[in-house]
Length: 99
Image 1 (tube, helix red, strand yellow):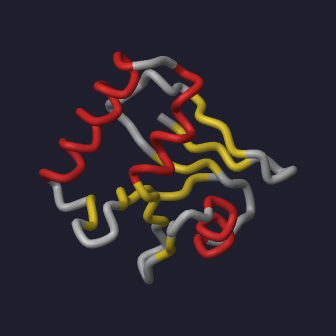
Image 2 (tube, rainbow, N blue to C red):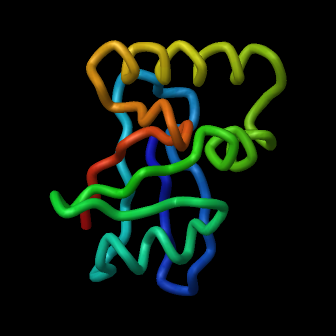
C-alpha cells in the first residue's frame, strides 16, 4: 500500500490491496510537509518517517472496499504493531517516505 501525496497535494492510495508493503510516495516533500498534508494527527519523527493515524488510513481506504479491505488493512497494522511500528498512544502507524 502506498499513500501517494501528489504534486497538487491530493492524497490517494496506490496499490491499496497490497498489504505486504507500506510507504508514502511524496516527491520532494519533507516528512513534516507530508504530515501537515495528511493532517488528523499525523506527525514526522527525527528519523525521517511519518506516523499516520490508523483512523486516517482507514479514511483513505474507504473507497477501496468495505469489510474485506478493512480486514486486510487491519492485518497489516497488526503486523506493523508486532514490529514496533505502531504508536500505542497516538494509534498511528509508521511509514517511510520514498520519492
